Length: 410
Image (tube, rainbow, N blue to C red; front, side, top):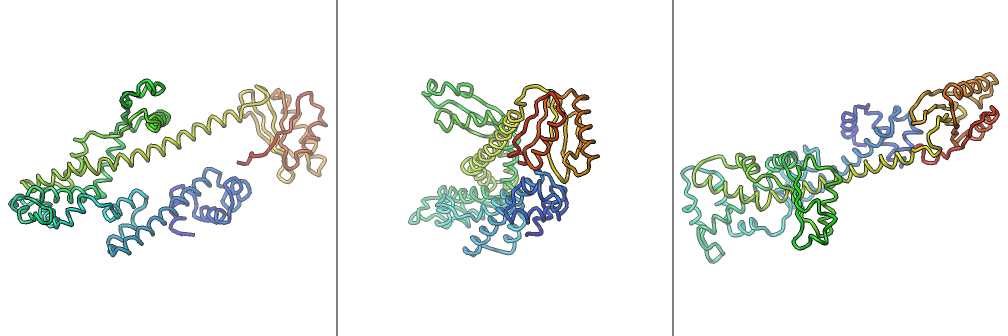
């Protein structure tokens, strides 16, 4: 077991490291959440199924993070790009997003405009521009790189290539990506429009023909409905932020001087956002909002299903429910007609002691009278038949029903 992961999860969930370690070992042996929660309380320190599920999910997340980290380190090493500083940055990344941001500048890319510009020998010009010296003359510097035979026809073409290189550098910058990512979440807007000439066919999506709503506030069901309209070819979906706000956020990271060279860098920032960084952030936001919407939709579905499954099959009645058992006794609860817990207790109707059996009988009769019980439910698990026989001997004039316990632990 990874000791760092164990302590990290323990700190996040505010439990003891030994509880996390024991749970991790049980998962490694193939145990399931319901099994651990019910039968391994002594090993986990009585963690409930919610905490156990959280431990499982974080273990999987951290294992996935480690696998991706190793893959990135291997890729960098194979291409002779792995420096001590870069290796330390990779190891410091604590989330997949942070890790991908570190890797972004070194990710193998398809043949981009920046790569073509580098092949034309324009990277030194990009470095000169990025220094943003007030005395630098971009046109004069660019003239030195004109080479019609290689494809650099004039100084304008040289400057355009240098800006392509700078735009890609800025797009790969981890700080710029982090700031823009935060901006997209805070001020991003979901916009949907109907595809041209599809108004009639898209009638069921008419509410979203011209829709706009903040990313931070849009409910999951609405986002999923718009995405469904897009998937069916009726709607066009965009997630954007005001371009001026984005530029004002990232320009200070790169435009550090004044003069013609700084103006070239500013143009590169604008191009980098419009052509590369803005679309990258939109794609990332689409994926993350879809994931969150799916999670919320599943939660709502689960809650609705829970209410349906827990609805009383007898209708509204006062119920006494018994969870049978030998060694630990029978757990007893009384519920009112709305399912509210009125009373809980433990009785021992299957005990060897006659006195305990008599006490159990008196307790049941007292509860039936006190809470005006209209039905008794008994679980069909261990000691179920014995408990049913005990209750029937009390000769109560109310229904006594055996309840299937399958799935109760889960």
